[in-house]
Length: 394
Image 1 (cartoon, rainbow, N blue to C red):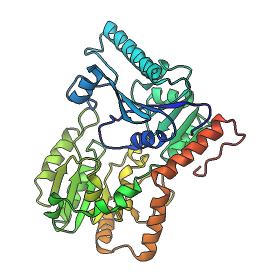
Image 2: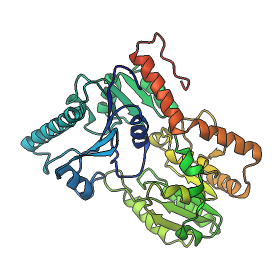
Image 3: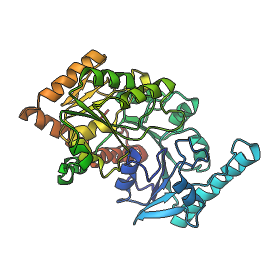
Image 4: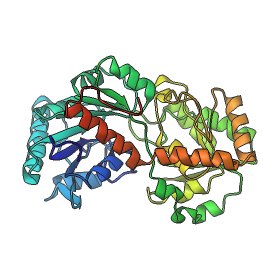
């Protein structure tokens, strides 16, 4: 139980439930074993190039049952929104549709004292305004600079940030701010099913450097192209969709992607389901995280880093500010030359037994169940008025 003060948890997420499993999905699944959870999907968009465009979600929102039951205590609701929402009267009606829809869900489920967990997205404060009276947990998964996000930080009763330095920044705005790193589903990436190599991977020669990602304009395609050109004997395996919408690759990135696809040692395998990813990652010889050198990217705590380690493969990444030092099995490289050298070492030198033990300990502590146990303790301390909220990760 999160706290005796809550009978339910409502999660306002920027990620659709049916997509790749991300932080908020694991949170919903974990806490639904303890209390009822309502997962509110991002509002479906009508424009095909929008990140939240989904015919399936539209059909769900406008179907006879926009709220569906996933498990005994986990429910997913897809709000309605009419097109042409920038027109004043339609915008007003859309706000009413969200308010009425969410209120109807809470009433139908018997939620009376809910904790609202929100990860930032444009318009999230407006949604929170329709849920007034409920305490708010802001689960900060990236660095943002919008004024709305600053207001969300101030308004929340508790802030949990996945990046250590971001947590320190947020603590200046909200004293009830804590660092809670990203986690990993250890069993999926270290279990027996991950050992089965997919057919399309079996055709790709070793050594393999792999990247699982949603390919946005945050990915350093120039670095990827440099690596592919310089190490023609290495197979670079890229898994994931190219992002649609404002955060997708810009014109220059798209040109670089075109060049990447023309290289014989680049293997772009496209989108894979969440339950398929572990077997692909396990088939890599090294995992790479090539982000552009931006504050936003340095402030991330990418899920893929933990997944690579849980699969037992070494990691080479551009710098991430959340770590005071390199985690076991991870090399950070700030230039393309250093990245290449670190990748060469990762592909050449298998981890020794001592390093394997260190990696296993790091991964075990990062298991989602351990992360959310810490979250539970923080929430209990804050909402039960403990004199000094305890958080072993601060």
